[in-house]
Image (cartoon, rainbow, N blue to C red; front, side, top):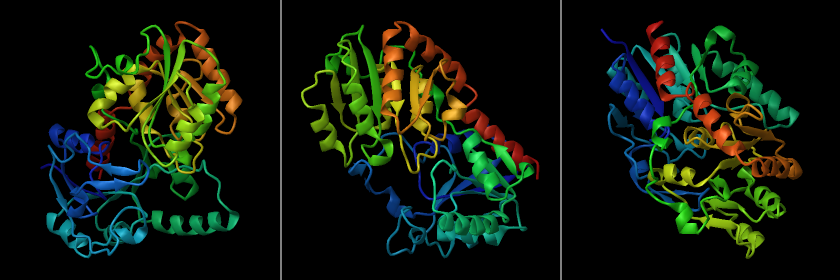
Length: 385
């Protein structure tokens, strides 16, 4: 008889839904996902990072068993601990009678209660992607360590996303035998275009086919550090090299002002998920210049690598040590050193075939960071109890 895994997470997202559907289709374990934000999350929701309402254009609820647990919070959402209040969550999980419980994210009232309630009743598994890359004041660091060490004692297995995330769990008291790699992954096949892209963004932006393109795609917010990237690019003065800034956010006006009338800097609005493979096809190299705090991983890097692109990323991205081999598929640069970013862009731009060679290496490198391997990690762990 198959073991049953209850999965608790706040809301459907474009990264987790394909994994849940894959787990269901593999039929090694039986899953049910309990969404704790409540049904109100299905309404088109305002994303403060993009500064607009977002409604993802790919199915997020197909192919797996799920339910929406009533959320009684007066200010529902994942932006604060009290935004997830589910008085009926524990009973709903109990009624389904799972053999194990997987919780995504600890910093929500109901998730903390579930971790503590089910400890020693059934195996409690945990998934997070936090790192130690951002500094904290000594007092805050001590208080957080005391609290998380106490909470993580109630966890049987923590699935770590990569090496920086593993260090985080170890810092808060989890030993090696309580840690399992569950690679942070996207649907690699979705982003790997074998033929002509559905949207020809180069043609739309009138960028010649033989010109090199750097791409930033994401929220125009301080954490992502897009102004530093734009300024570093503007100082290149290379006529056949372009920068495309795709997204929206609070820094958009400042970015456009800084770009001025530079014909080599192009802006595209937020692109929904179905357009992302075409967007990555536009570029030769993807850049994530994040300075933090809070760039725990950077799944856009996975996407770009799956699309066969070279990558440049800052040392504040949690994925950097796992996904980038310096000089092979890209470079890691100091988030606070605009000159180093500029030097790396020049190195890629002046070496005619380097970006293509790096892109080919990216495809091979990202193969092991797959949804299939993430699913296998979950299935083997559940089967082991």
